[in-house]
Image (cartoon, rainbow, N blue to C red):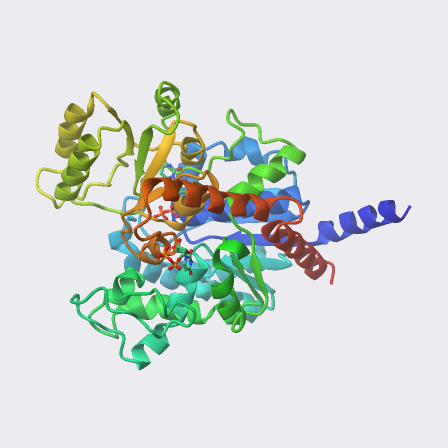
Length: 464
Ligand code: UDP
Ligand code: UDP
């Protein structure tokens, strides 16, 4: 009877807990926060996912979310404007514009939404890159959890910007990029100028992006808790540093792996591959057939994520390297990847590359990346070191060649770097780290346990 009573209590509590999840409107953020939404739904919580209008339209067009979430009667999507016209580009170059419009427009809409939602959310999980939502939740008395989609290392580097400014290690000029950086506690032995988040390269301490990432990060301790998509075994020492400022910390990564393992025991994911897709672009599944025709660990997978913009010259340089590697390669050339300011324009570059690639390459616009990385034919990943991509590669035990583009990516690539390691050592290290990730999401593992603790805490807040 004890078990029955506990189950009944749990059901009653779940009915009153309603979690609102609100991501920053970018692919990497939507992806990981939707995985969290799915995990909380599996655990029986009522969840509302607040998506930008712009992204929601794309998500419905290109992913299976509607089918997948239809198995949770208490789950709902809601949409909100990001404040920009629908035809406005939203690439990495427009970062500040998007932040300004979120603060100018979305902030007020969010306040109204929070007041009108029924049942009223008992707690909010907000992307910690949008602290206006923390302010509003606090003003309205709703417990708020900050979720950061970046690595603990990158979060901690942002958090230490005031120390870096105070010690005059920031700002710096582009010379001497290997100079050691000493004002990020826990990383004194290996951090160099070039490893700091790209925004730290600003020439002026009042640079608006530098100031913004700093204030958004310093605001995290104002939330009731911090949730990170990482694992204790990978970033333990840095997590201890963060805990001294944000003591209520949950580490639930890799979220995609946690979700895949929990979906097996619960209502199964009704998808072809069993992997949840949260893509904002149409996935070209033909690449899986192409991979099927290749031997184990033979293919280099190349992708620079959803935001990076590269020049025509960089594309051509990569292409030369890939062709000369004499390895087959699968290359994601997302629409908008090649900057239009680089001469002939994207179409011309792509034509040139397709022409030169027929023999060993496969060029696609967007792929089901988790599935690609777990395909036996993939032997290496040339990546921009986005945190989601890094975790997906770690879990799939695929060694990475890093070309960090911007933001937290420099920190991520430094974290997974093995200086001077030979090829076999790289493979061994990839196996070791992949094993750690497996352990963390398995029964009793650190991320598995933290997710359980998060669910219980959200539930008990809802029953108060
Ligand atoms: N992704 C994908 N298909 C692609 C390229 C990327 O599904 O062709 C996914 C990838 O699996 C990851 C996300 O897009 O989950 C990109 O997030 P990440 O943090 O790696 O980089 P960002 O796009 O934010 O720079
Ligand atoms: N490492 C890490 N996180 C850290 C510090 C190091 O993942 O905060 C990794 C590093 O990338 C390397 C390993 O731990 O794979 C050993 O690092 P160390 O700097 O001691 O030696 P390295 O192999 O880089 O010469």
